[in-house]
Image (cartoon, rainbow, N blue to C red):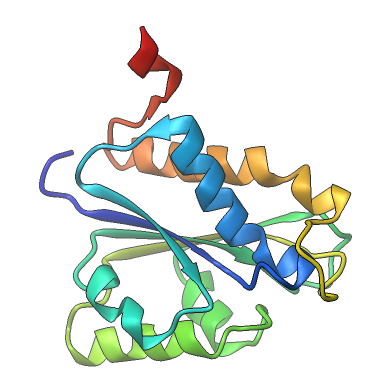
Length: 166
């Protein structure tokens, strides 16, 4: 939907195994789908306040991340509405120092995204390593689909990348 700006933000540290799932999910989204101009997919890594400009005034923010929810490894966790502010008050993500600060700053600037959705996965391991564990890696397609469905539900024309070849 032209004029309605959306950001899909994958966050995490890719050198700590499953902690990098959000970044890997955004990479998969970018590889598998063609996003319209008003949708930006961002590898936020472990970025902090430098995300303020990119997130400022977005109509929709979709966060993809590892979420410590006390569930079995590979469990998908979806948060929306009133659950999102409470998510940012509790430390459910190991690197979750920067993003709450960014969102608090955006709120002070009256530039907070109008809607924020969080899609995450319960990690199995946060040990030093570049590869996701099997249960978490298996969740990447579902995380990507959750983001695509949310974008489409909000009026964004997200097309499979294979449609480019046709």
